[in-house]
Length: 513
Image (cartoon, rainbow, N blue to C red):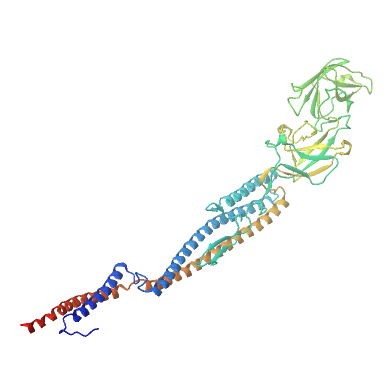
């Protein structure tokens, strides 16, 4: 600071010193007032260039840590959605295993197992719905279609956490169901005598078979591909006066179709003329009226002579009756039941997996023939069951022959627990599926716990970084207030001293009086 010489008035050094001090005080007061008004210690790069650089980096890291916390929260929410789907999936699989265990017991029958299959199929479809509907921002979480999920859980590049998605958890991958696009039927033991297939026109009927194991058993067959076969119903007896029944060569178009019939004597007009009626016991629509009358048949009473049952038009029916020598044995009102198997046809019984006979339908279209079962004939289905058989070489078919086959109904979620063995196997499958889902759920829970630890660590780091930034960048308001008060007072004193310094040269005027 320059020395003051009041005798030299060309330059007022004292006032200049006071002015300089006032300017410095004003500058510092303005700085502290700016800090008080903004709350920041560094308001310009010139305030602290190095501090500004460090603080800016600290701020970027602090903001990055905040974003990491948001990412972790979003990731935990995503995983919670996946956890909800997996938890519900485990509940469904537990129920599926319980149903399979129920089906594995022979305390239930075929129809009950079929109902359980339908229920398991519905459960499998619900698992697929969970896979399709468990999403986050439109992305599926449980089918692994989009690959592993990477979460940015740190500030810098590469500081990520990866959720390794489990293998697809759809019912097909878990082997809980099978995708069967078309009805299929496959022989278990093949035979040259049979050909097994599905008939598309029959699919969807109420009588269609459910998925499971079945068998066709040959109960009887025609004598040949030229002659039918007639047998007395086991619950009936021969009409008095009829010695025996046999098949006869059938060349007319009116030959009987395979089925069960009743022969009733309507009247005996004289020693050579008899009238009787034939009624189809299986199909009331047969021959339109349900019966066929045969009248004025000449009968010879010589031993061994016979009389063919004929239509009114004279065509052969295919049944040959051998009458006894006593015509008095034929009495009006007598009847008997018989079974007739037409030429080149066989009688089959459809058995379920347990070997119980189940109703099947007559189907005479195309190459399908001879599908009959006389169990519960009153409820005989007139539509197909989705399966047809074609006879191969007719001579190769033998009564008692059984051909087993597996039928799979068209269903995207087909399940087969039709036997105790298959139900037991399905229990094991359900256990494996449950292991996979619970493993995925366990891994998910571990990852969520890991993210919780990471969240706590990042929260602490963010506070510490924010504290470091605060000490560098933000003003100490108490200190700044003290400094501002100090410089306010100094400003006043400097102003007063400037006034005195300006007045000091006036004392030299006394020398000029």
